[in-house]
Picture 1 (cartoon, rainbow, N blue to C red):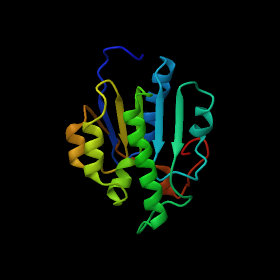
Picture 2: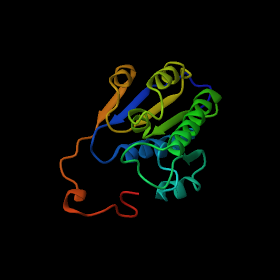
Picture 3: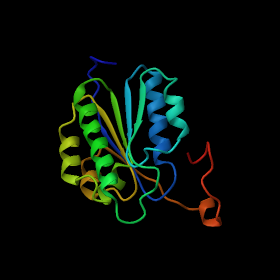
Picture 4: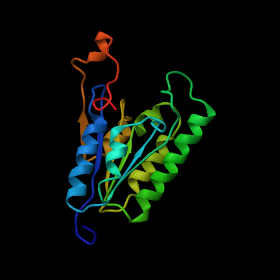
Length: 176
């Protein structure tokens, strides 16, 4: 779709409910189906074997890269967590400014912001300086108000019920 006059917008998928990453992947699949080039950068999900990473290799124009360690960050992030988040953000800067993509998804970026691994000011600068025709999606819980303010789309996912509350853990192919 390069060369069109399409105006790219900013999407924020936030909230405590399941489905933020899944919604972003649905948009990525739709965009890829129309010949758009998509880059999804996963923050804090580096060593997990998410099914979508395998599938993306089979879809032309869809690239998914993940940064982070094998563990979930439950308390204070480590230096390695910080380094991984910084690598992911540098990749995000490159992807946004490169002109190679029509859609860039920054998955779990708000979590990285809230943990102090990525500066909100840097994210706001990235969003404000994105190319006019680039669609930018940011996912994660507790999106900062400043990011919500500049977004064109904001969708909040609300948990009403979840099997985790019954002690049922993550299931392959459903949660990852």
